[in-house]
Image (cartoon, rainbow, N blue to C red; front, side, top):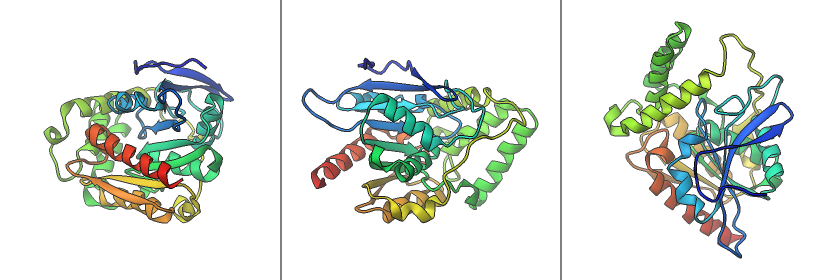
Length: 286
């Protein structure tokens, strides 16, 4: 199968059973090596472009796949019930990756854990950041509760720019100012969120079926897990990723200082360094 050799942001399309799923497929392991493919799973309401700094840092040494989840980015909306883990499994089988390393941020972390539990033969290792147990309804930090209410109020009022601004501010969190995060990242979050929200209409049915009881089933994971925390992320979300790592064999956690919920996007070089160290250790252990 031919794929891009350098990151150019142009996704390919996979004809699933319910519309096309967009994905970037780029890079390759060095000649003669059989390193696993790395699959980058984006946060909710965004798309694969959130990984635009990470992809070129990895693609020189790895095959890198970055899908748009169904209903996000350039992927088709659902017309019937579906599970994100099943979509990803179908894509990986189509691409012939073999067991891959799933690297997920926020919603992407939930997809990574769900796929490892439901399709274990397709997963060699997990990296989770800012989530992993699908329990965002459990956010109790006062800033998060207030901010979520403001975001929902803007959406209910039909104020799409206001919604996008509140959405991007999840990168800022309660302890920083926008300038601490970087205006470019905030602009990209607003743009990606607006693109994805624009694919949907008010009151449309939510066909997504989550994999049940990720916290309880995390102990069933059999692959190495790395949790990468943004030290300034909400404590509930740090705890989610930590729970996944501590439940798995040989799991461990690393904290990136001066980073929040979207730590891989804020600190791509540090994130890649930590991930590649983890991959070397996992390969040596196997």
